[in-house]
Image (cartoon, rainbow, N blue to C red; front, side):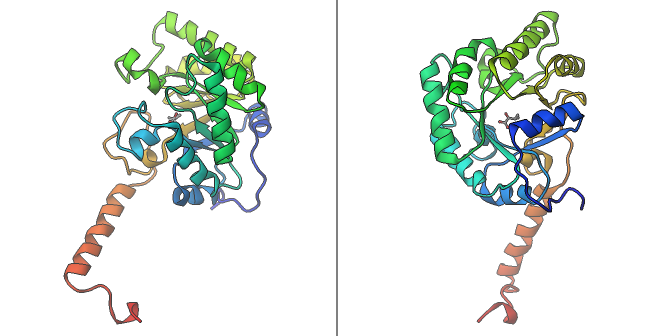
Length: 272
Ligand code: KIV
């Protein structure tokens, strides 16, 4: 398996920058727990995102808004304990950075100190510039996130593709420049037209990581449980299934239940 890792050289923000320059695509996936993160660490995944999509995947909330800083720190620390190679980025949850840059810095410092992560990610453009700048002054790398920003779902009213009109597209390109000038090391572009993502990628010197943003971004990100077929109810057009582990887990559990009921488990070799 060529993409299983053999030697460990830690991925840094500089490595990602060089990958963009050299045209090598960046592979990023989410993880929220130690066991999954250990499996990811066996591969050559470049970036592991402890996304606030944990609110949906791990906690069962409808949106990402309810997840707390304490929860993100708990998930982040679990993932960091497993990862040796990839750059680990932890999402700043809703309400911990918007409109108050001192709170933003305090939240980011807690994430870095209590998880051991390499960077934080937050959603938004010019409106969160002050928060981003203050976090960066503490030497904390920041990844931006534009396009469909799920923490703004109540403003959008829909999870449909963003920036399909000229005004929103221009705003996104402007915000991408603002994030780059502020010092963000990369930016996630979520659910926007492929041509717009291509334009942003060409205009920026920092890497773009797309989700539902077409093939021209510098990297791609998916939610791990989505691409493994575990969160089966969520099937957007951009999602490619790399496994059907939801079915496999159900099959295995049904077999176990049946074996216990039929007294087929444990057998004579499975006891002391
Ligand atoms: O929270 C998350 O998983 C994310 C990715 C979808 C980029 O922000």
